[in-house]
Amino acid sequence: MRNTRAALKWITQVLKEMDIPFEIDGGLAAEIYGTRRELADIDLNIMEADFGKILPIIKPYITFGPEYYKDSHWEMLLVSFEYAGQHVDIGALGTMKYFDKEGKAWFDFHSDLSEVRMMEWEGMMLPVINEMQFLIYKKKLSRGVDRKDVYGMEDALVESFGGNIPQ
Image (cartoon, rainbow, N blue to C red; front, side, top):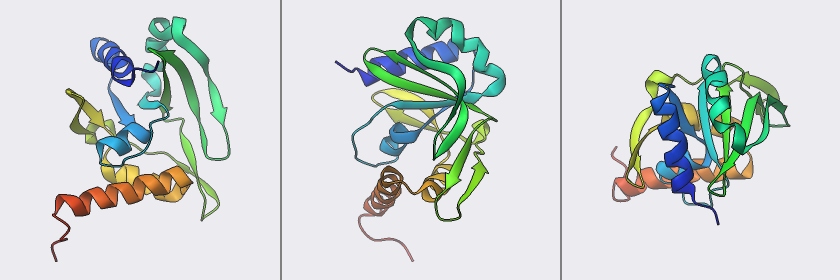
């Protein structure tokens, strides 16, 4: 059985103890920002320079990598592991690119870990990718899941204003 909270608590504690800056991204970031959909995995981003530091600790749980990964949407140095039944992906910032579906071009994924938003989820304070950076790449990727995340975030924003967006 998958225990997302336990997996997230474990890996974020490891990263904090090792003094490795990180950000929550992907579906969990979307959920924290108000999107409601089933979570497939936990996506974390760390600096490429810190990538090798985490590997000895997660080694017993690794299911992929570390190696360069590329599909029709993403390209990056990636390591995947499973902990408490939860799949976790860690991408190396500085190696990440995504495909703009409409523009039909690859873009460097820019994320500044100094601009994360500290947000609460399940009683944990977590560094979450900046919402503007998140929306920009989600709109360009434009997969079904990305459109759901964008609409969900927009709906959550409207709801936070009681359904009335200030003029």
